Amino acid sequence: MDKLFPHSEYPEDQEHSKTILTIHVLRSGLAAGSILSVLSGTLTTLYKEPSALLSSRHGNRLLIHASRGSIAGFLLSSVMLTTTMWGKEDIEWQDRAWLLLGSEGQCEFDKWLAAGGVLGGLGAMALGKGRTAASAATAINKKPAIVVKPLEAIMGGISLGTASGAAGCIAWRIGVHGSFF
Image 1 (cartoon, one colour):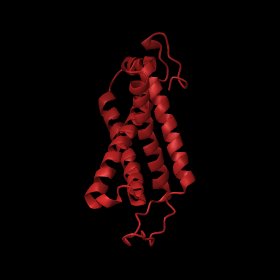
Image 2: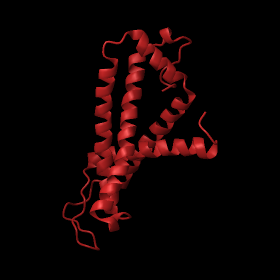
Image 3: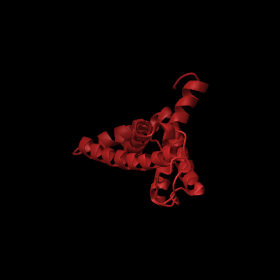
Image 4: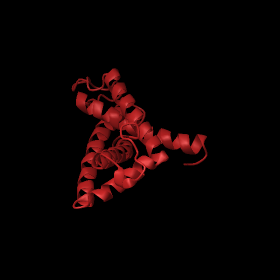
């Protein structure tokens, strides 16, 4: 976000503070929903059919969970932002936006999440997920395939890419650099 919005010298001079804070909170909600959906999709697969953990059924289930989880996180974060910032003065918005733009770690994390989301969405489109026929069956146990609609596949790809971006950033900061900033 530091590339889109300039960081002012003083908090009270920060322009576009409501836009900056809104984008940050909605992006954080999407990322939180994405990360939790990976866990819920994996646990669902382990509960329903543990042998399918390494199959395409698990991948399809993960895409569906990720698309729904990211939307739920996005909507929940919008409600939380509204309730938290309702009636606050402009200086409070400006101060929070100024702190966000001034945080080197937050700006790097934003870049990782954006890159992961774009790559995940493009990857889902390139793989052609969502084209699975409803009547298709797996060769092993003849269960009907889990159908992923095209929009769910793209949203799931963006969501899984965002979760991968978060994991990549954490691995980069802790694994390569030894710590956060």
